[in-house]
Length: 373
Image 1 (cartoon, rainbow, N blue to C red):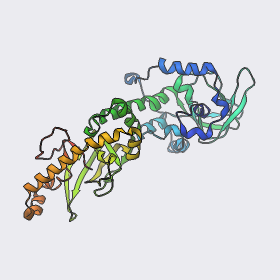
Image 2: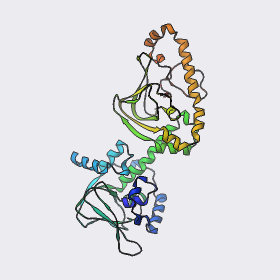
Image 3: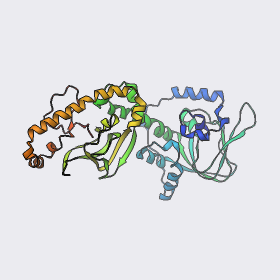
Image 4: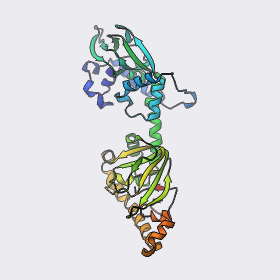
């Protein structure tokens, strides 16, 4: 419940303004149960036993759910697939005026989002009569803590009018909002381990970066980064493909090898203000994980200076390729040769291997990463 989540204000800063002080003092046995359940219940996904819940809904019902959860902090960082799973699994629940939706001390089975109507929250302490501590209206949500930590309900929520709620069951709630988050973190950490620029990071530092990555989507033909623009985001491709194009001073474009899942680009943007060296566009539907420069510096602090020193290798390799490019393409025939060999024309912003021990590179590596965008 929001009253529950407000008591967990360390986890959700967004809820601080709605923090009803009476709920900050939970019964001692509730907190003990919460701590115990965190360690007792495994959070390892059991994919072989899990079947997604799909409750048929009309287009109008789906729209109502979308509106109800749009501003809810719990769903802010879900990707589109997870968001779809939430909508599919939610069931409509109706309660009459003065009917209890949940009761303090009971076992939690659902997380609720309010579509219409109003509800009051009551908490009983030390054997005293229950007191009203909060109220909910459309868009409010409650019941999450009992599902997250297997503790008893911390309050009674009573309808003060006829209400329509959308309910998410315990299994789906935990799977989507907790286990999927853990799965995504592991996937991101595996991606980050392949980025040479970040190889010197400790595991816990990569863990912090993985938690800060956000999923973004691009439609077919949409520009992800544009050549010449100042870079301030790093991208990892989660699914889909992207095209890479280099433009010369005359505006001629030269296609380069594309990028696919697990490949990354723009990491130097986390360290400096270098302009983007190529234009990258979505080829079909593209899903990326992204991290901004501010978050990167805030998370790693002094470590950033070490990474900056390591990044000098990237610049050296680029300079070597530029020199090799000039040797291969005499000034008088540069335009003709570029037309015959677009990849070479794009060499100043290559897709290349970034190993610290790489010798002078004499050719483009199509399957490596794009490190200068």
